[in-house]
Length: 327
Image 1 (spheres, rainbow, N blue to C red):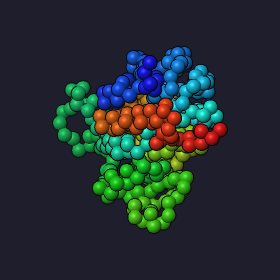
Image 2: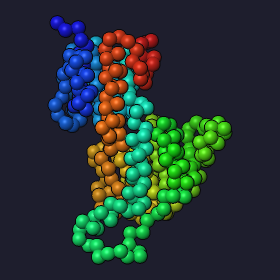
Image 3: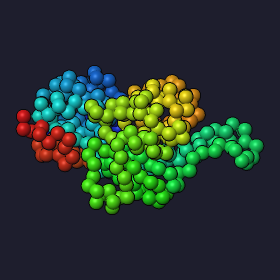
Image 4: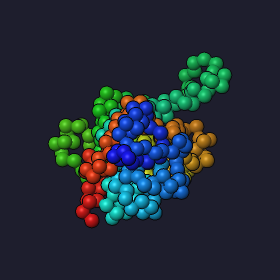
């Protein structure tokens, strides 16, 4: 009988991660390239020490209770709103995430959405591919300058700070709102201005969301706040879909309350509000924020380290519930 820890993996990960898992554990896994149903999760969790899951897997108390010997839930993501962390803590189960490795790739994605929607790249691409282009014209697909504009950052964690670095290269004025304000000296060093959220929305040409999904941030951007934005401004979301009231966003886009939106996340993924598909002033991406080879591989390294440590009775390096073993 092998002494290696028993791990259930809900979805195939990058090759280097799979190699490490197979060498370091007794691995069982789903070979379905989709989110698992609750029944599939319950079946997969039987007789394992650790679960390595995805953000799209719902790990609630019923799932956690199905295996009294489960030691760790390792989430292959920075966010962990898919896991009932309080229930895991009550059951002495460690919950972990993969922070710090996807800040640059997600900031790059936010920047790509800004350019694509403000400079109407996707609209222009469709126009050319449709055989409609008859040559240069002075009023054709006019957009908004990024250089010299005002960027409003809602949330200033690692990804928000990565956005500041990129904004400097485009001579942008950077405003930020965060639940906890930085010291004035830190703001000076970073070259950012703190304003209340309503003021940020009113002044920004681009509003980029970088908050975690929590009780106080669901529908943070709702109809009232969309109405506070400039009619020439763009909303960029690479955070979590439910931070934005998607129905209200559709109405704002239809009414030209704002100029457009670049979205990498959606309120009810993978479903979208149907009207979004028809709106030309949107760029819609399938949750690609961390989708680079290097980043997804680094996420895998962290997820495996977390899972193995938890299975072996050690404190995982990236705990989100540090009091799990004090119940």
